Amino acid sequence: MNDDKPLSAVEKVKEGSGGLRGDLAAQLAADAPHFTGTGAQLLKFHGSYQQEDRDRRRERRGTGEEPAYQFMVRCKIPGGLLTAGQYLALDELAGCYGNGTLRVTTRQDNQFHGVVKGDLKATIRALNDVLVTTLGACGDVVRNVVTCPAPLPGGLRSEVLQLARRLSDHLLPRTRAYHEIWLNGEQVAEGAPQPEPIYGSRYLPRKFKVAIAFPDDNCCDVHSNDLGFLVVSDGGRLAGFNVLVGGGLGRTHGKQDTYPRLADTLGFAATDEAIEVAEAVVKVQRDHGDRGDRRHARLKYLLDERGLDWFRDEVERQLGRPLAPPAPVQVQDIEDHLGWHDQADGRSFYGVFVENGRIQDIGERRLRSGLSRIVRTLGPGVRFTPQQNVLLTDIPNGRRALVERILADHGVLREETLSAVRRWSMACPALPTCGLALAEAERALPDVVTQLERELERLGLADAALTVRMTGCPNGCARPYTADLAFVGRSLDKYAVFVGGSMLGTRLGVVYADLVPRNQLVAAVRPLFERYRDERLGAERFGDFCHRVGVEALRASVPVTQ
Ligand code: SRM
Ligand code: SF4
Image (cartoon, rainbow, N blue to C red; front, top):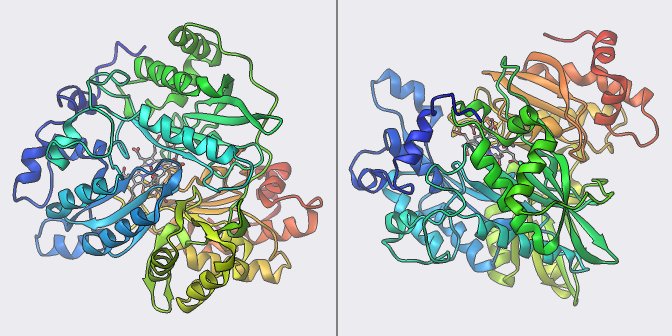
């Protein structure tokens, strides 16, 4: 399809890059503090984005200086699983080359911010030395495979985590360019690099996201992914997965032909078929996705244009056999995994709340130091969650008190002291690092949550669990459109307010008010909370209430700040 459209500029860059090489090595070796043209594009596939410190933009423009170039480096961590040694290596690199913080992402990765060009190679090399790759963390390939990282007893979580790793390995680019450029031709973290049997010379039309969820725990927001697997179990055994396709959240303000979409159920794959089915789905998108218009290139648009039946036919053609019909399972619940939980064999895991994913020391709250002290002392596994938090795993039950003492010594907030609204909140990085940010998010949400806490307390709603998410633009990186309540950046200091999404990630919210100044966000939603307090049915959640009443009725009944 779309053969009539000319290829977009990025398609030409990929095709002409000789397996993601281009002139990246030469540009990396040059003195300039930044990459230009194709180099900056190809760098993404290697796991890094060229950025600038936007806080310094005005001052530097004023003095005629070039932007304060810096780089974001994203580690690709399937299922968010790290060993203690890997975590400590990341922590050290954040201090040596980054801005002193680790950033847990909504896809269970870690990002370093503020790396200068001259330190990129040392950073990526050091990551690979501890078997953490950055290859394919960004770019038009399969991104990090996400799933629930909680080591709950029963064995299914561990089987699914292993599958996430195998899926990720199978769908990694095979180019040798990564090794040549960053690792001096040596092979360290992956299997033998080959030509690209899955991707071909142009890779995919766009980023491609894969998630695996459990019906009783959709902590990874499976319906927001291009390809999702929903666990189907049979008597405690992993029977397979319902296969979901066509989720994605990105949209552009004012462009109605871009929109968030939840994934549809395509069929069923037995456990040992999952990788083959994933490859088939990826290949259909490779061959039919839009390569002329990057705003229209995600799988969701192909699904809407051609329909689910056409898509299933194409996947079955790739597979050479029909897909089985889906099992009658659907998402029913979600967990955040914070606090203490039993594992098996006298061990426990502890979920640590990380506000907006930023592991850092600020003032009395020394989360970064506290985590590294625990990891040095006890050597636990470290797992990043899709809600930007950290799990410390395999802790002997007898050491729980020690963990608690170290956290307290470092001023780290325990989950039981958090309000429900803060505990479930998420924001994307936005300013000052993200080049696409129109408004603040990570730096603004904590104060907005404080105001929400006061308001909810005043209304007697302090215990109401609701997901509040903020992003600096409509791209949807903190998954705002599936939240109960979301603030999406429109322009500096102004936001669109979305309500009516579902905490379970199974329904999209809609715009309730637009262009609301940041200092009026809470005032704008106060009337909704008042109606929620008075009219909710039993344990109805805020998003479900807004959806039931309907945004038109909500708007009609209250004055909206514009
Ligand atoms: Fe994202 C682009 C950060 C998860 C949709 N995202 C970006 C960039 C790279 C900005 C850019 O292109 O210049 C951001 C880097 C900011 C910075 O300074 O670090 C960025 N996205 C993030 C992270 C770090 C947000 C976070 O709070 O953790 C997440 C990294 C995930 C990872 O480890 O791979 C992140 N991004 C998401 C998600 C959520 C998810 O996948 O569960 C989405 C919505 C789901 C989806 O993909 O549809 C998301 N990011 C986007 C889009 C819109 C894509 C689209 O289809 O239109 C862009 C812009 C683009 O691709 O052109 C984008
Ligand atoms: Fe940047 Fe927008 Fe993503 Fe936030 S949502 S990180 S502002 S692209």
